[in-house]
Length: 407
Image (cartoon, rainbow, N blue to C red; front, side):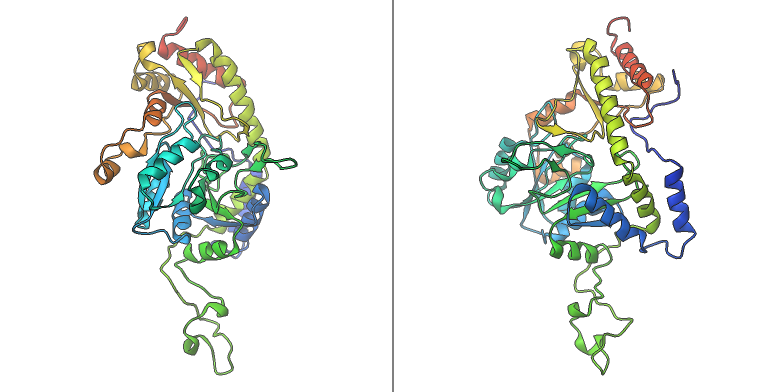
């Protein structure tokens, strides 16, 4: 059995990935060359969306989505409080307010009742909702979009955990299962390709959409807001020569954007990784099944994350729900003992409404589902290079840290 340190997540890089990056390094373009649109096309095809726009991170993807929707001061974005900071921060970057929704205490996902309550708190100012697909499980966007009042909201799916996930909810006779990223019920879906995610570009993100206007705007906003298409030029005198031809050096900036471009280096790696997506997803599913079986004897003190119905996850995280009080152990003590045993763990996530910035901005809030989820959650190692013995080692170490059975 391996005794190497097991982090909670790690990339899987092979020789094909290295060769794809080396090919770019030996070629003429390192920044925005042919590898970027090739990766975008591959991603769009993989998830079933019409367009994909690559960018520098998942955070940049969320920010670009908020910009593309023209959210701003006076608007409210509804965000589940169990998420990474970036989901809520993207709304604040554009001057919009955030109303945090509660989540299911066993899955960490926003449900229709939580959206209904958040809409009431928004008092008619809500313009968008950013549901989060957590750990690989998808929030029910079909049900969320059917909530009374949701038809006036732009939906942006934070799918940074859910590449490779399929929602198998029956939406009608002959209706195909929904792949996360196809944006069937949303304006846009955002992804992250950080090294702990299912596939990686090193650092990077992307937005998928079926709206050409949004896709074009996202591409401009990721590159300073610049446009180079003659049909978009406003200053006709400077844009065109005496014969009416666009000047070859000319560009315009109709609105301020950001430098959120992805490089050819990152996208070459990402395209190579996408070719192994199903392999990665299937291995993660097998490891999750192994964890579920190995953890069963530790119930009721330790349980797997609650399962979202009619969802086939592309698992990003393996989250356990632990009754630390009943076990007589604190989470920090368990995490330290696990680390001493060579096993990394993490907490996904601290409810964002508890962060000092948001407490100062919006005051104290009580979201009981999120608080119940947070007090129990602990993420265990999950990445494709793990073997079955690694899972058994993790579970044995957890039992020892909790002093369960022979531990």
